[in-house]
Length: 130
Image 1 (spheres, rainbow, N blue to C red):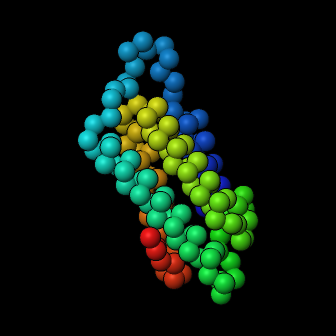
Image 2 (image 1 turned 120 degrees about the vertical axis):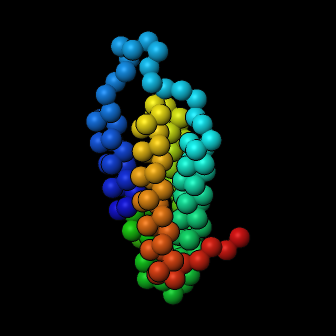
């Protein structure tokens, strides 16, 4: 469910962003160090969420390991990894395409949402094992 809400939020954010196609120069510029740090934070949080979900799904005592309706209640490891890698690639693509003020807003919002997911998973007993 949380991934569905995340995708809807991205779709609404993209719809709300005005197009700068008429401006030949545009507001887009290469990412700076802060942008890269925010992206790294997002990617690490998605990776931690993936590892926590895999750990919870491999625990035979868990009744439910995932609340995402696309993945199902007990997805296999391959499906979790594929979904997470797709989310990571989509994050990088959208982050790179957005102009500067929206890039930072997107990265900070995503970090907040993923941070809440990771914290909630930890609260439910999920851990990260490498």
